[in-house]
Length: 99
Image 1 (cartoon, rainbow, N blue to C red):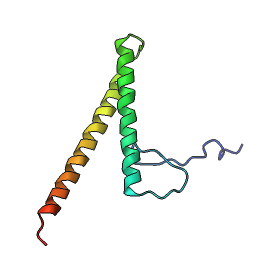
Image 2: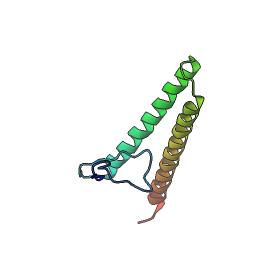
Image 3: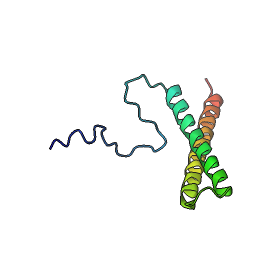
């Protein structure tokens, strides 16, 4: 029995759960990476809001899924805000430099 055909995608260790995996080799600029990350954060927040609305309507039996989605969205937003704050701080520090 040939088991190589069972799983054709390689396993990635230490992978960001919010990062999309692209199989094609496209040029990844900083803007594209940032845009992809922000799209993933947006989808996590939207999924959390959708699950919360369903839970409030009584359509979800497993509240654990709602809690996990909410925590993922919260963590993603906190990371995004932290990155933004650090980028603004770095920009302000560069603007204070004397030439």
